[in-house]
Length: 498
Ligand SMILES: Cc1cc2nc3c(=O)[nH]c(=O)nc-3n(C[C@H](O)[C@H](O)[C@H](O)COP(=O)(O)OP(=O)(O)OC[C@H]3O[C@@H](n4cnc5c(N)ncnc54)[C@H](O)[C@@H]3O)c2cc1C
Image (cartoon, helix red, strand yellow):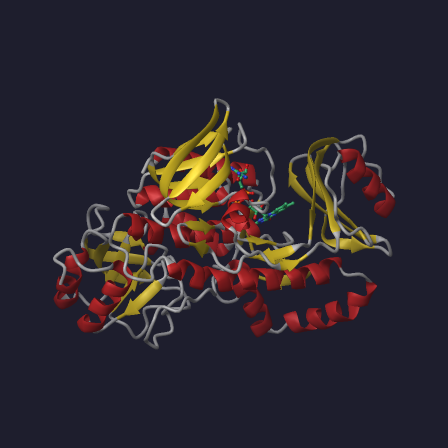
């Protein structure tokens, strides 16, 4: 093989995946057809779960001082992101191109090579490896890899060439968008509706606003790029305000087309991010789910390449992330109807507005929007934390094999910086530590007590928890026997093969 894994696409999904693979010690090459990183601001921030996964890799501080917000919406209807704990808050005001530059710098620090100006144009999966054809400035070349991951966006070439099914619904509306400076534009966070359509606007920074225009009856079958003049003309038609003198930073269009692949893996080819799912960017989900796809996949693919993956581990990428993709389409379709539906949708908006005032409804919707309610099927057991992500709890450690240094104060996120499994032993149980010793090349063991518990206590009723590298709980103690089963099931056979 020329390289263990080729990742097509250096967007958020591709860069996150490349970093995760490097943390697993895997050799990875990233290709991107663009000669330079894009300046598009698209995704403007992080959901609570994305913040957690970035913190798990020690990445949040690279973004500098971000501000979190508890204000949210579901298809323009206000949501309150503070039920009991405040941990559902999201980050806004971080343009996607900045996120990509941070992820790119992290990946580079880990030794990832990104070949820009190199487009994947062909692939053949012969069962033993994948031959990829690449067009670059110096012409066309071929190279061979063990696995290819298409992180090449909504129009994915990898998806098409590898023959993935991508069913869904075509566009029914088209939305025009521009980031513009030099205009005094009143914020319209939840949209102003007229008979002819809806307009939204939000400040992106000093003197920059994002405007979005949806004119009813325009189905969105555009093949040419959008000009700022078109956006300004549509804005004028719906608001009566002239913004044509403004300076555009970016103009684009998008639709409510919604599609999801039927499988995230075909042989040695996998998909992550928009390559696997496209939908209306309502509710700020796409980039976030894409990053989380990669965090789910990275360690599993790393385990396969490193030769210790238990049977079925790589297939769990599809079985875990496909339902998340289904939810993503359902949620964004519903939000699209509420947001961009016409007058006929008003009764439903009124009913939903009443319902959202109920705590349980608010909690249900923010669980979906924040990504915090994702529970994977991790096998037998009835502890409420099983399958959920472990919140970022402060711990006082007395014994620590993470290599993080002296025992003392730490956090769950810090324990996961190395993208390895973590056994948190809450009862100073020597038998558990002995059991886990056979996996010490894949699983760190930390003896600790929680320091500052959130209102939701995932440790209640357990003496130990086993976390996967993505921070999901796959086993809760006591019981060294069941721990062995869980370690075998998620981390393969121990070093001594027993
Ligand atoms: C207007 C708008 C607003 C949005 N707002 C939000 C938001 O607030 N929050 C949110 O979470 N999401 C948002 N999104 C969605 C978000 O932008 C996408 O979900 C995200 O970019 C997906 O990341 P990705 O890495 O999968 O794909 P992309 O970001 O599309 O990256 C794909 C990369 O692959 C490269 N590529 C393509 N083909 C090839 C090839 N053949 N060979 C090599 N390279 C190739 C491309 O050049 C690109 O760099 C928004 C989207 C839009 C359009």
